[in-house]
Amino acid sequence: MTEQRIVFPVAGDKITVPPEGTTLSEAEKIKKGICPCCSGTLVFQEGCKACYGCGWGGCE
Ligand SMILES: [Zn+2]
Image 1: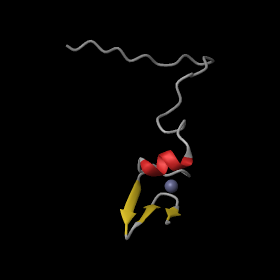
Image 2: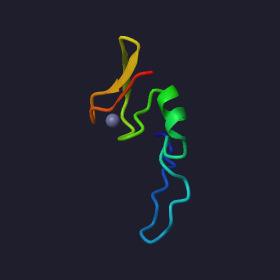
Image 3: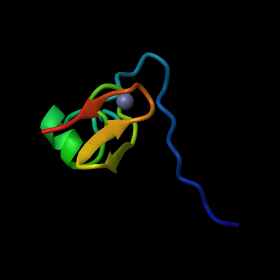
Image 4: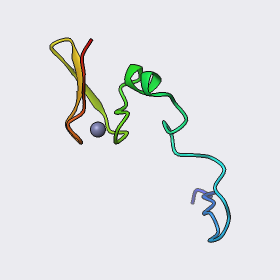
């Protein structure tokens, strides 16, 4: 058996580590392929990045 070391946050405790991507600026998220609106995965098509999750699209 593999020992599991999953620590669940206790109710009432403040979570100091934000979910991945939330500390990035909008430009950094786009560069990493993360939607700045919904943090979904961006797809690259025809020179533009777009998000199927929320309809966000970034073209320059
Ligand atoms: Zn999105």
